[in-house]
Image (cartoon, rainbow, N blue to C red; front, side):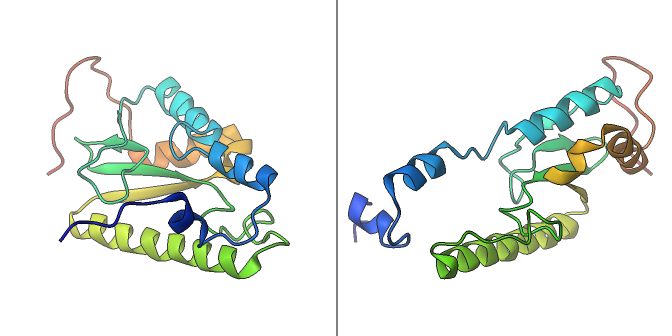
Length: 161
């Protein structure tokens, strides 16, 4: 049996009454290389850590992966992942039912990814968009999570016991 091809009509059914402006804004939203993610990547690199990006084989394609340490970092947008901050608690005024369902699906998917990663013995840190405003505090949190940066440039650290 052949898969039904996605048509413009089938993709817009989920989003009723979208104005052309709203559609343009939504098309511009990125899932990779966002401003908060780039800020975290620069900070982590400046602290002396090296990482891999968006590893496909892992649940949720984490933003930063530290394979030898078996640790990873997700950088989540407060709105999209329903953070408890002011921005995360806000819902758009139009199509509220659609947005509630969309954000609920994101939260469910995030929880599934975390369960899969923890089952694979990965340690996970979630950095929220609002936390990127205080770089000093974020640096302390990241250092505490990752442990000491490797002093040997270019050489792999010994695996944890």
